[in-house]
Image (cartoon, rainbow, N blue to C red; front, side, top):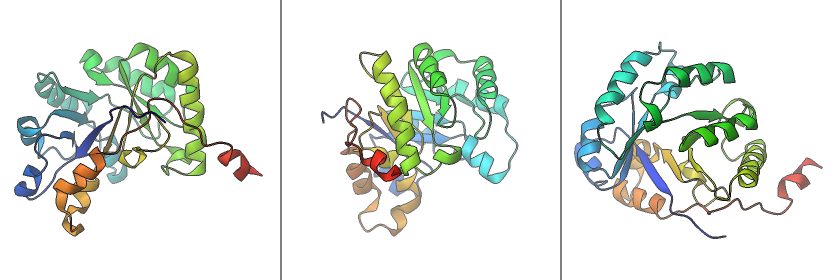
Length: 232
């Protein structure tokens, strides 16, 4: 199983500031819902992923301000290594998602989201049209790593491999744990370091180092008939 270089975007905010500084030189993910570390991430990071905050806002029931998100992105997309997640609706249908893509004002500096309950044909279409596509766990596939989740991921990556000589850039939202699994993600993100470094004896720097050393394969690796056997 040949590995590819995987970018690990570490979620913020990371507090206190000295703990953030242990992650200097790494890749960061900053959410519009919690933007406190945005300047610091650009000052000390390699690249920055601007997250639209849809998941946080969906869980909290807060109203979405997409105009505010567009304006926020406009400032930070001046940095050539910064990119943004195009607005999406966690429990919306494919038509709702496509309408939000049409309204996106910053071109291909953004990346659309394919939610796993949506048709695989939509994932293939997005990969044809955009240089990077985000995958989001949703509905019956909300539990990352579950049997249903893995079956669905097997299906979509098999379809990608049948369509493309090389797997397109796929980013797994909230998917850091997928590093070193059988799926060829080009990049992943997680707030694990931000949330758990206070209780981890290794501290944020070593936590991030361990994550960054885990790489995804270059192509889909299916583990025999594991999931077929579980159906019986």
